[in-house]
Length: 239
Image (cartoon, rainbow, N blue to C red; front, side, top):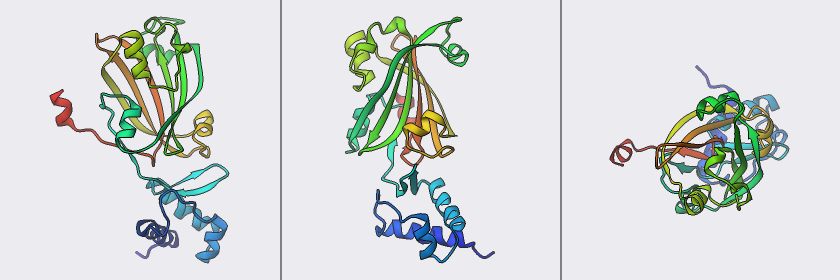
C-alpha cells in the first residue's frame, strides 16, 4: 500500500536527524513552518511529529516546541552504586533539584506495598533529575521514618544512597521493580515541562536494606526518550 504523507514526512525528518543535519538537542522548526516546507496541513505535520515522538527520536516541551532527543542514558535498574555515579560514568552531567521534603500520611496503596499499618506516616521527598541540563526524571521517594530520623534536614540534593550509608549505616540489599508506560499528568507533566498526556516511562521500585527490611520506595517518572533500560541476567545471577 502507498505510504501516507505523514509517514513520508516522518522518514524525511528521521533522515535529517540520522545525517546530523538536525543535530541532537536542536530545536525543530515550528509546526507552521514545517507545514509550509512540506506543503501540507498542520494536522499531517502533527501526525508525523507524534510518530517520531513515540519512537523517542524527538521530544516536545510545553510552549517551547519540538527538539531532537539527545542520546539515551543507559539505565541498569540493578546498578549497585548511586544514580549520580551511574550518569557520570557515561560522561554525562547530572543535577538533582529538591522540590519538597515533608511528612505525609501513607496512601492505602503505599501502606500495602510497604507493609504498613493504618494511618501510618512516611517521609516524602520530591525531586527532579537533569542530565546535561535537561530535566528527564521526576521522582517521589517515600521513606519509613523509623529508619531515617532527621534526614529531612540533610542536603537532599545529594545522593540518598550515600546519606543512607554515611549517616544511618544502611545499604541497599535487593530491590523489586515494576516498569511500565504511562502518561504525564499534573505535577509530573509540570516538572518535566511536558504537555498533558505526553508519554512517559514509570519505574516503581521497593527497596530492602542489607538485613532484608523494607526501607523505602521510589516512583520515577522518566521522559520515555531519555533512557534505555538494560539488564544483564547473567550478571544478576552471579551476584
